[in-house]
Length: 169
Image (tube, rainbow, N blue to C red; front, side):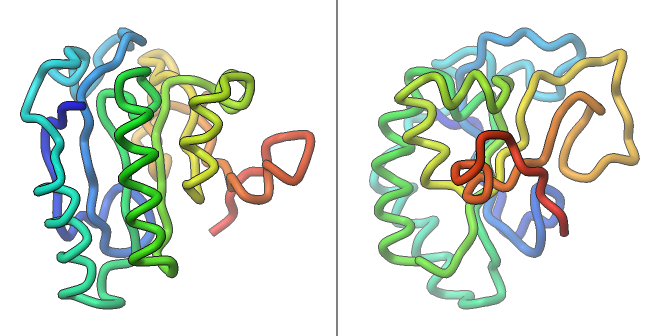
């Protein structure tokens, strides 16, 4: 898996101060995507044990100041990203069980839960922002999403329900 960047102390992509990992690889082709370069799965650098350790150590160094991890892209649920992210998130949750994990995907909740691999990935996360960015529904007043078709979903509550449950701050 490749990644295009890691933002430490990010305050835009979720609640609180976060670490945001931008992975490469996406085939949604959303018009006016803000991260077009990440569509290419080979863009950026390889995500290795070194980056995993740096992220975990950053959380440990700054303690509760850093609230959680955000996974964006590209698309973290792009097929080549799933296995490396599942492996990393299992380590992350073992080391930092009290931190939340947010994930963005161009797939909808309904599409994700029908796919065994994507479902395994989001089960390790807390909040999902789902759906493709749609230029015609762009709204700069929305929190954590770019267009009004996208939803901010509470994953744990939704997995226990027959329908997606929206996250309420």
